[in-house]
Image (spheres, one colour):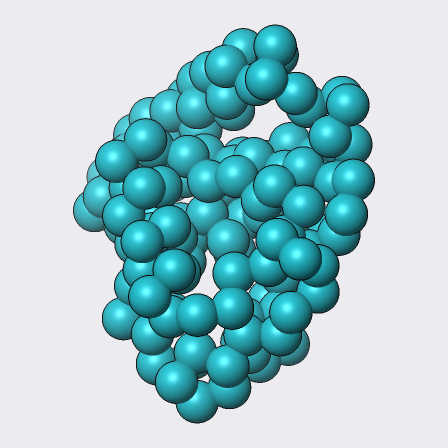
Length: 135
C-alpha cells in the first residue's frame, strides 16, 4: 500500500511507514504538502482535509502508532509504530498490513503492541554505539 501525500517518489517509503512518520512527527511538512498538492481521495475513508489530517497527527502522536483504516484501499488496514534514531527523530516505522478481517477490533491491540515492541527494540539498537564507531 502506498499513501500518496504528494511527496516526490525519491522520498517515498512504504505507505504505512511514511504515514507513521508524517503522522508522528512531520506535521509541518504534511501541512505544506496538503496546501501545495491537496489530498487525493482514494476511498470514502480517505483523509482529504488539512484540518482532519492535523487532528489525526495529534491522535497518532498521543497513542504512539498510526493506522490506515481503509483510507487508501477498501478492505485493507495497516498499522505502524515509529522507529527513532539516537536523537529521538522518527527514522522509520515497523508496519503490519492485512485485510480488515485479519486486523480487526479483537486483535488490533495485540498487533499494535507487537509493532510497538519491535520498533522499540530497533530504536534501542540504533541508539547503541557500534564497534566501528568506537576507537
